[in-house]
Length: 262
Length: 190
Image (cartoon, rainbow over all chains, first blue to last red; front, side):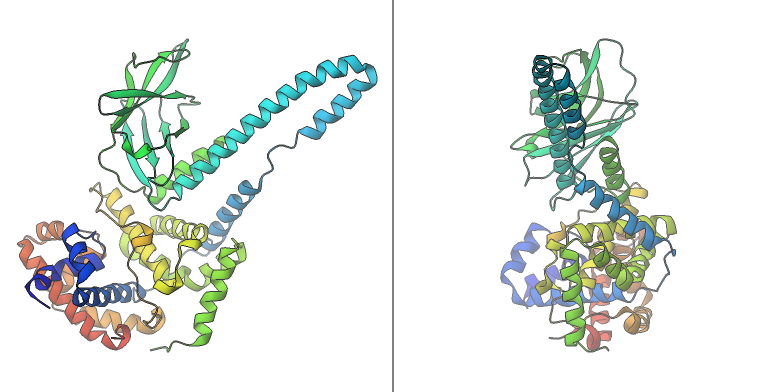
């Protein structure tokens, strides 16, 4: 152990107790067996403090709550895409008894609707899966956003080509207006699409190969159909400079909102 | 100290196999084995039963969903759970107190004990750990508790205690070395 090791002594302890290490400490640890060993000892002290914490009994119903939440998740993950198809088919067969030509024409229309429905359900399912995957991502990055009345969160992961925006507290839209998302990289703003909101709440999956490169995000009101550049007042905005981690409450709230819409 | 036994290690392995199959029964067993200690860690940090419940639920659901990220070679199941519980509880505490996030590590970089270390049985070591903590000089224990249980940075601890950061550093280092000595028979296999 040398002077440099002594200099890192307190930081090693802080690292073991939860602080993120500085780049200098990481670099030093990569080559210093003494400090690696000292860190392992400090980590074990921290682990002993956790295991030796004074015991507190949780509420008796906590176990049931946790299992019920897990069962809900399992059911949602196993939910079939659509159960309507047999009804449509039965209706189509009934129509066939009346007139083959009518059936043919009707079937064409139905098939189109079914395809559209399947596409929508499939897209919704894919979005939900993307959302769930992002919320569980190892390297989840999470940014708070705020407006005059609205607030929200934007989250993504460097490992995934997608991000998600969730907003609450949006004011009612005037007729002929929509909410539009804008993603900025430096001075360049690109549309992230229309944000559909109900009761002031909305969320949207944004697919992009490099979602962590955005520098800021905002939501504006725009004429129906959207605009090519932002023209309305922002109702929500935030810079994406300082990522944080969601609190358990925020994480559960985000998931609940997505599940409620699915 | 409870010895490491083949049975205790195979208990972990069987439970992990159940969890990897996303079995609700596996989650129930995980909670039955570690629910109380996870809750105790959460409560020790947030000091509120409702919040401790939320943190506990979050930890168990996350670990159940993400069991593939648990690497038995890096440590025991309880060490993994408690490390995540501690981190989540600290995040919650800092958020509720309106403090900036203390930069924390992603789950795959969290530090927990090596597989070679004996499993830490909370029931058996609680008295020893509490005894060791109270065997520290108050100034050293204070610094460790502010950083570990209140999630403070060393700078925040120096502001809270109104002492220079160098003093915090030396109290922290001395306190950790002293704890390691006092708990050596439990935690040290080197």
